[in-house]
Length: 427
Image 1 (tube, one colour):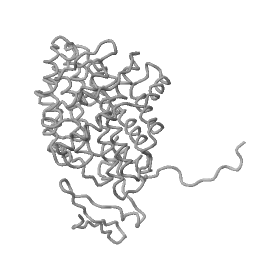
Image 2 (cartoon, helix red, strand yellow; image 1 turned 180 degrees about the vertical axis):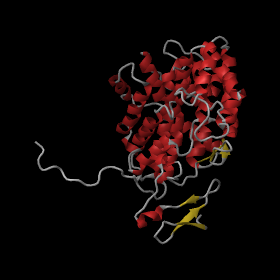
Image 3 (cartoon, one colour; image 1 turned 120 degrees about the vertical axis):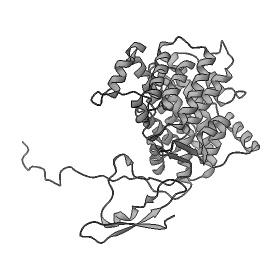
Image 4 (cartoon, one colour; image 1 turned 60 degrees about the vertical axis):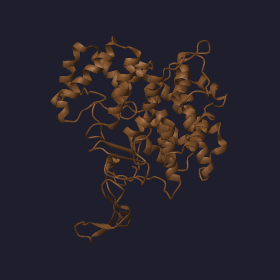
C-alpha cells in the first residue's frame, strides 16, 4: 500500500516524489521505479537496500531472529510439522487438510522415480566429480526428459513441474552419491516417508537393506525443513531472475543450484568441516580463536554469526537439539572432529567476544555436524541443501509467474572509458 510519499531532492532540480510502500510486517519501502523518468537510478551493490520483488512466502527479521513461512514460525514448523507439509504450505500458501496432505504425499511418492535413461547421463561425469557439478548438470537436463510440462504460462504445467522437482531431487541427490562411490543406484520406495526414502537411497545396497533409524530420519526431515526457504537470498534471486526470462523450471532450478554452490552461500556447512580440519585438534583451539579475533588475520570461524540474523539464528536452536539427539542415537563420543566442534560451540556461547558480537553457532554449524555424524561426506552437504531448498525456489518461481512480472535487468554505474576512436595507424 502506498499511503505515504517520500521526496528526493537533487540540487538544481525539482523534487521527485516517490511512493512509500508498506508491507504486512517489516520496514517501509521507497518505490524508486519512477526515477528512470528523471534519467537517474539508484546504486546498491549486493542489493542490500533494494527489494527486487513483492512476495507472500517468507519473512525474516534478522534483528529479532524471526523466520516465518507463510506466517508460521520456523520453530513451530520444525517441531510440529514435517517437510512435505511444509512444502505444501510454501507452494500453496496454507497448511493442507488431512485429505489434501494425503493426496499431496501420494503425488510426490508417485513422482520419485526418474526416467531410466537419465542414469546413462551420469556416465558422462568423472567418478571424482563434485556432486554439485553432477547435480547442476542432471537437473538442467531434466527438461529434455520431461518436456510435456514446460509451458510456463500453463498453471497445470507449473504445478506438475513443481511436484516433479520436489519428488525427484532426493533421488537425483542419492544417485550423485552412489555414482561417486561406484555403487548401484537405489530405486525409491513408496512405503517410506520422504526423509526415510532419501536415507534408504543413500546408504542401502541391493544386497543389504537396513532399516532406517527413526531418529536419523527425523533429523534429516528437520534439516530439510530448516533449509526449505530463506527469502530473497542469492540462489532464490537467481531462480527468479532466470525465470523472468521465461526459462523452463528445470533450467531455473539448475541456475539456483549453481548459485547455491558458492562457499559464501550453500557451501557454508561444508566450509565448517573444512575449518575443523584446518584447526585439527582441540589443543589448537586457543591459537585459532586468537586468529579469529585478530582483525588483521584472514582466518574466519565458519558457522558462526549470520549475514541476516543479527541476533541468534532461529533455525540453530532447533538444529542444536537435533544434533544432540543424533549424537546420542549414534553413541558418538570419541570422534576428534566432533569433539572439536563441541568445544568451539562452548566457547562461542560463553566467550564475551562472541556474545557481544552475536557470533552464535548458526544452522550451518550444527547441520554440518549432524550430516557428518550420519555418515554423509562433506562433498554432499550442499547437495542436501539444494534438495531441501528446491521447494523454496519453485515456490518463488510459481509466485512470480502467477502475476505480472518483468524480465530482470539491473543497471550499472559505468566507470570505464568514454567513447574513443580506434587509432588510424595500428601497425
